[in-house]
Length: 212
Image 1: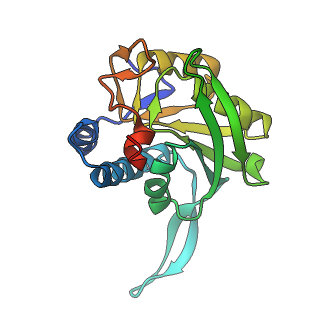
Image 2 (image 1 turned 45 degrees about the vertical axis):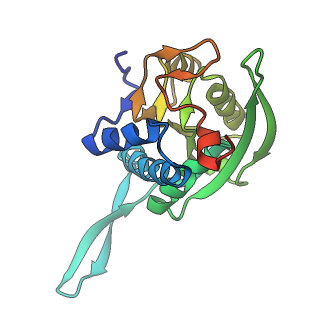
């Protein structure tokens, strides 16, 4: 699947190397968590590439100079529970000043539609650039619903970050929210009959938290 202008696939060799091991069923829970954190940090680097900067005056040990710092809107990371929490530490490593919100959605096993059960956001969400994180973009239903809910809460500057997406999920998200750029490490082949990405990596939440 070729990426649309609003979809950015990070094909860096280091990223692909880490993805191979995060996919492997032989990867232990502790190594899986570490890899997700490292991949999330690399994705944070990419998704913030277009942040605006401004020059400030500083003094180095050698001379005064004008040097860039990030300007514009402050940041907020929003995790789609529960698997999104596995990406938070890696994102916060690079963005320690970001506020963090959570949205709880679970997928009805019959309809595959998302059901919201929790929402906690910073009060000034409308003043922040919001980066939504979820490891897997499968059907896209949860991500689409989360973005709708965040827009209802007042967020107007939104970005979506996932590790792996399906063609179906990418299509659903970009059609529902063409204004929200999407950054991923890979777009896989297809969804199976159970809504899992193929080849994917299985259930990211279960693998992060060791619940299966």
